[in-house]
Length: 270
Image 1 (cartoon, rainbow, N blue to C red):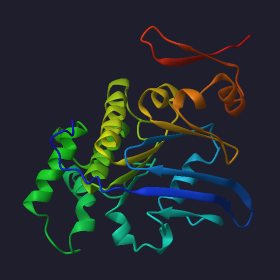
Image 2 (image 1 turned 45 degrees about the vertical axis):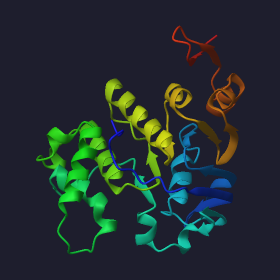
Image 3 (image 1 turned 180 degrees about the horizontal axis):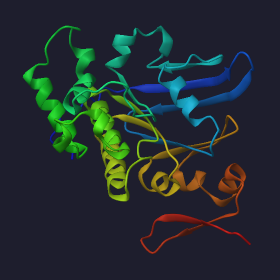
């Protein structure tokens, strides 16, 4: 899907050091507690855990959308919030969980938003930018939607458009919050294949995920978050073992190798 695309694979390193985050006022709630890890170019890092564990809050801190209340996030050795937003937008792209847009734009214009960090605010899109946006829409199976209004699309269609916009930004680090939550089985599989291909090409890919099977199959490393703490960090099959899943999700999980030779699990109700 992306083998013929020009990709920015500038080497990057993201370091999370004793990260803590509290929400409020009026009520103060500790959401993240001393989370530390490092990620580099070429990795597909999946962040998993139960609802309310702090996964999205962690991703938003990593992407500079929230400011930590303790600890820090470094991007290539520099504190993320010390980097000018326009400069950071050429190095890191973020796909939100919520894909609803309040205004009606053509899909092709939404995807072109990803090219804005590379041009002056009032400049018209260049032919090269338009061609690249078309490549991104083709890679995410939404080129046929290019002349439709974004507000007329289904949730799954919007999600593919937002992924195309993320690709169009062409940054060496990409962050995605539940990028397949509205997608059918086929398109979800295509997205995970695409994300793995981006990592294999040299980008750093970080995604919040609920699909443990997909995390085991496509991610090079998995972080398991529970009650704001990093429970495990490492190879998917080492992190997603029965003890960790049972503890974090409060279920009786049994893991096994399915007939396709892949990691799998089921919930034991006994």
